[in-house]
Each structure stands twice: as structure tokens, then as C-alpha cells.
Image (tube, rainbow, N blue to C red):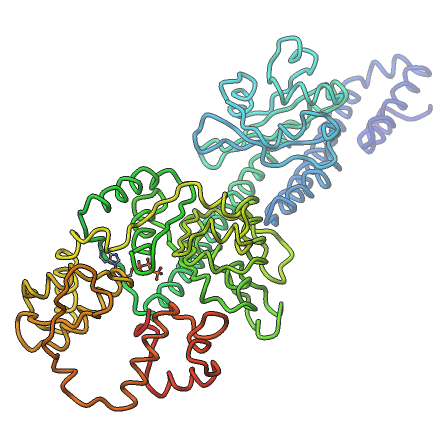
Amino acid sequence: MDHTPEDLNNIIAGISDKRELQQLIDDIKKVAPELAQGISMQLTVAMAKILAAGQIAEKEKEQAMLLSISNSIAATRNKMDLLEVLHGKLRTVFSFSHTVICILNSDKKTVRTFLLDPHSPNQQHPDYPRLTDEIFPISDSLLNVALHADTPVIFDGERLIRERKGSLCVRVNYDSGIREFLFVSLRNGEERIGFLMMCSAVPNEIDRHKLNLIQGIASQLSVAVASILANDELEKKMRAINSYKQQLEKEKWYLQEEINEVYNYQEIIGSSAALQQVYQRVSQVAKADSSVLILGETGTGKELLARAIHNQSYRKDQLMVKVNCAALSPNLIESELFGHERGSFTGATDRRIGKFELAAGGTLFLDEIGEMPLDLQVKLLRVLQEKEIERVGGKTVIPTDVRIIAATNRQLWEEVQAGRFRSDLYYRLNVFPVTIPPLRDRRKDIPALVDHFIAKYNRKTGKKISGVSAEVLSGLMAYSWPGNIRELEHLIERFVILTQDTFIQHIDIPVHNLVENPEPPTVASAEDARVRTIDEIEREHIVYVLKKCQGKVSGAGGAAELLQIPSTTLNSKMKRLNIHRRDFE
Ligand SMILES: Nc1ncnc2c1ncn2[C@@H]1O[C@H](COP(=O)(O)OP(=O)(O)OP(=O)(O)O)[C@@H](O)[C@H]1O
């Protein structure tokens, strides 16, 4: 130690390491204690300089880490990215077991879990699913503190359990070995949006010197979380818009089909006691949402009644979709009802939804249910029981929510006894039967119906016919109406077209069905006076037979069978003679 004090000053000033300096001080104290006394001031200054330099270096390191974490957070686009930052990058700076982000709900009174560490030890806890599924009131004092913690606050796990704070969240974590909790709030500007929770299994593990750093990270996290939430909200709205669009497309397609069929729905006319009873049944069942079975002869107004039930039900703002079970072709019947996936059979070039899906939320009207083939009855029964369908060629089941209204002009129970209709399906549909009486049992309704149809066809033809003569009316009242109201409507339609007068003086009523009036009208109509062509007669006869078969062209009981010609011949005749569905439906 033969240095001069000046040499020593230079050596001391050159030392930048705390330990090196301490070693030198110890050496000087040992060999020259009075010298150490003499340069104590220089030693203190040197030590202070080294410490300050260390702090600056530490600060710079922190800044660099914060910058790196900030950059990673700023690059996050979704929850998965955020998880990676929290449980990857953050772990290189802090020691902790896992983190959780909770979000304030729009009610501002509850929070929900937004992000959970998939590796958290809580996963084994039986109450873990509740952490993700439930919402927690912020009236809970711990959550309230967490939400308002402008600077990070640390809680001892033992103490929280002792003081019964933080209920489920703290308990599940504590049971899984967590002993320390750090909370810091997340804010979007002035608005509090949630909080970050950092959990540690070791008391005092969370570095108290790095709380500033955590706070800085929390500010960055707030921006990322707010943007993910805004994106989620946007996506939710887009999904809602898309599903609404699809629904509209479905409805447009269905309405187009309806228009193509030139079908319009109208009000139910009639005030006879028999019809009053029907109205009463309808009002009893309309809002009940149970299945309804409408029974009645052809043309009595079963479809009209089904629509009335739908219109009075809670489903009235959704569609009532009609399926004519008799008109479905056997190989397409299943796809028609349940839809099909693209390529599921030859000709299935596109995915198509079935009538069940189309009627979602509304009513499915199964007309002519008595005609449904037995194998499809089984499938229908399964759908009604399980309330889910499978598209043809599809792999997933689709839940259905439809109300079923079925109608038939057959004696369905007799069909069951004859083995043509499944009894289990019969019981399922026959929850609330409504029978519409035939027109001959409610003749009182005939005058109102006549006026109604004259007004209807006046509108269509631009005529101004004011009514029928007393003679005509008594003829109409005497007729037995095997085709019921449809027959009456067609008769009136024909005579509105034929009548040149403002009053219908004469109507040809089929003689053989007159039941009460022995004097059928004898005056020949203008139409009868003219010689009709073979084509006209053929057309009339085909239309008559088609009506008799309820529009069924081919197959058993179809018009082709009755006319004893192949259905292809009948189809080409119908084309040539300009016969459309509306002519016989
Ligand atoms: N009470 C009524 N008031 C007004 N029009 C009616 C009434 N009942 C039936 N109609 C009309 O009669 C025609 C046949 O009615 P609808 O198709 O509802 O009968 P349906 O019983 O379903 O026949 P089908 O068994 O042949 O299918 C329709 O044009 C309908 O608008």
C-alpha cells in the first residue's frame, strides 16, 4: 500500500463495481486505518455514484422491458394473442403462478371472466367451470377494490380467506395453492373496464420493486382489452346481421313460391252456430302452442283455419309454412321436409333448407297428413319427439322450434285401424282436434259467402255485380255442396265471369246433388247454348277429375289412373290445354 492519497482518489474514481469498491475499502481499513479515515468522504461519494449508476441501469432495463411488452401487447388481435403475452412474455419479467383478466359487464354492477390462463392450477378444482360461466357482483368488496385499484394492490391469501373476501374466485385459487393476489384496474380513458389479477403460490413472490412496471403494463393491457371487446361486439353484430339476412332470404324465397302459386289468404266468413263453435275451439288453442289437428271434408276451409290459428298465436310474426303431404314426390319428400346438403343425392347441386327449418319459430302446416307415406310418418314422429332434424346427407342435428298444425279430410282414426297411419303419430297430432262442419250442415253461412265471393271476383274482373236473385239463392241453399266452400267459390267465380248483367239471375247447379229443392233451375245458361269444342270438353273433364283427385296427377288415386291414361300423357294434355294448378286447386 504505497499509493499516495492522490493515486488512491484516482483508483477509487475509476471503480464502477460496488463489490470491487467494498473490497478496496476493506483492504485500506485493514492496512492503513488512518488513511481510510482520511479518504472516507471520497469513498462515500464513490459508493453513491456506483449505486446511482446501478439504479439508472435498472431503470433503463425496466424501460426496455416495458417497451418490449408494450409492443407485444399492441400487436395483439385477439384473446389468444393476449394470452401469449401474459403467460409468455410477462413470465420473463415477473414470478407468478397465473393471471386472470376480468371485465365489467354492461350493467356496471357485475364482472365476468374475460381471460383465464389455460395452465392455471385451478383447472382441477370442481368449481373451476363456475369461474368462467358465472357473473360476480362488484358489491363484493374485493372485486370493488380490484376495479378501482389505480395502483397495484397486493393481498395475502391467508388473510382473504380468514376475512372471507372475494368469495368463489379467492376460494378456488386458495384451494389450488395460491397464497398471494395482486390486483390492478384496467381503464379505457376515464372508464373502468375491468382488472388484472396476478396470482402467486409463494407469499411475497411478486416483486414489490416492479409494481410501477405492472402498472405501465396494465395501461397497455387496457387498450388491447378494449379493442378486443369492441371487435367481439362488432363480430356479434355482424353474425346477427348475417343470420337476419339468411332469414330474410328464406322468407323471400318462400313468399316467392307462395306468389307463384297465386294463393291469397282471406278472412273466414260465416256466423252459423256450427262455425261459432269452431271459432271458440280456435281461440282456446291458438295461444297454447300445442299441436292442432283440423278435420273436415275437402274445401271446408281447413287451411284458412290453420292460418287463423297461426295469426292468433304468439308465433304470428314468423312464417306459417305449408306442406302438402299428398303432393310431395316420394323420393324428394324427405329433402323437402328436412332439407339436404350439397351433393347428398344426384341433383342436389346446392345446400337447401327444408320446410322445418324455414318454419323455425313459426308454424308448420301439414296439409293432407293422412296421405303421408308410412316410412315418412316414422321420421316425422321422431322429429316431433326429439325436436331436432337432420338434413339429408348432413352430419349434424339441427334443433327445431315449430308448432305443428295438421289437417286431413280423411277419417284419420279409420286410417289408423286400417294400418295406413301410425297410431303413435296419430296420438301426437291429435292433441287438440278441431272439426270444421261441411257447408251442407251450415247453410246459414251461404248468403254471406255468396256476397263475399261476388265481391272478390268483382274486384278481380272489374265487374259491378250486386248479388244473386232470390231464386238463385234458394237453389244454392238447397244444394248439398260435396266440394264445400271451394265448390261454391268456383261456381260464383264462373258466373261472375259469365254474367253480363249487374245481378246474377241464373246459376247452373248440378242436379243430382240437390237435396231439398225439387225444382232445379231450368233456364239454359249462355254458355250451354253455344256448341262446345272437343278440346273445351276434354279440358273441362280433366279439370273435373283433377279436382276430384285433389290435384293428384299420378300414382294411386291420381287423375291419370282414373282417366286410365299414363301420367305422362295426362301431363302433356294439361300443357296443351293450358291447365294450371290454380284451375283445379
Ligand atoms: N269460411 C270461409 N270464408 C271464406 N272463404 C273460405 C271459407 N272457407 C273456405 N274458404 C275458401 O275456400 C277455398 C278452400 O278452402 P281451404 O283450401 O282452406 O279448404 P281445405 O279444407 O283446406 O281444402 P282441402 O281439404 O281440399 O285442402 C279457399 O279459397 C278458401 O279461401
